[in-house]
Image (tube, rainbow, N blue to C red):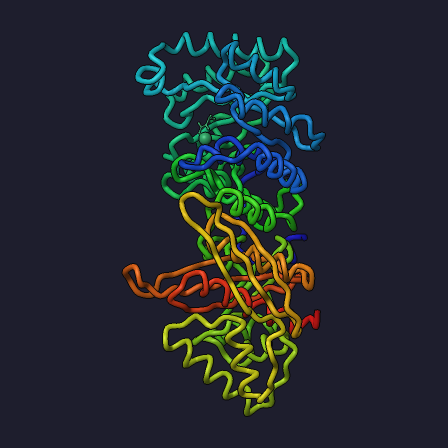
Length: 513
Ligand code: KIV
Ligand code: ZN
């Protein structure tokens, strides 16, 4: 995608700065990202993530911190043997024990770090600056003499005395570090400070600089871009901005800004951004708010009448880049702000053609449903439209019976009897809980008829107390179609099952599967 295909500001300041033509992506989702409080991946999950990052085209994957546990070292070794195009690396302190563990992992690249701020040196490491320099030289030389390529990070760089930081960086490059990564370990910088910081370092350091920004004050992405403006040729990022405390700079946001706002080559396959984010959301269990830029559910969703009309006339009116560029699809959403154009385009997409009068009535019903405080899902719109157009259709999939067994001594198990096109089928499933096992049991039956994936599942308690009424909304995908459906029931399992069946019926009706 060239700059002409992004609908951005005409206002340009880039002539005053001289950013690099190409920036490398160093992804640390499996190391700093896994340091997100409460998060751990299994070895198999780490391998799946590493393969996805490789498909995405990141230059380097920090697969973990080898010395931190046996399982960690094992997963790094397995990833190193996957034959990926990305360079696989491990984090280590500049001490023999750490470096030997990295050597055991068979990776070609090591990321060595030691703190350089007086605060860390005195209160945490309880050594002095000379000792920091000595360990830096010894660690880099030991790693290099064993065939490793070395990247070096002076931890807490942005709170380090500038003269000492330059001295530490020069020491590291003289010892053989090929990249100097500058961590804003606790996210204290502003973009302007970062630009000046990197511009200054660049005057004194010959090897490429890398940025590693934390998001404690919500500036990690902006600071990473400012570091690039100041000359950084690599950036450390995490998918979905996961990481210690408030996280690291988000891979997808930095990547799209570099392409769209700076026209900088990154080597990334942008159309894989969305599926990479989805994978990390699923495996980490950390789901992004819908308003998250680039990959949030609403990033390319439009409801209000004026916006939808504008989008349908020319997408550039309210989208600065096409959703397909990052592997997403545009979503027009029905609701109280919707206009007739939007509702009509959604209904057409569903394969129905109401006349003018019917369309007016449908729009009125959608708005009054929205006014009553309900979010209008695709299946709601479908049901309203069919009702107003007097279309009678029967559900292809009907639940005949559902039995769930759960408790403290049994694995939650569900068995279902489902009628598909008038014929009864039974199936069973196990899961993490009664809802998961019920959904798995239904999928086991319906999988034979249609390839339908459950992409999102959200449950809200409408009332308080143990007798709360559950409002479940699901998003299902089939053959590139994405639809939402919801159900409200006093029984959480039934609300979930009903929402899923509604969505499945709509998808199967359109497909004629
Ligand atoms: O934030 C940080 O300082 C780090 C180092 C290990 C590079 O993650
Ligand atoms: Zn970090």
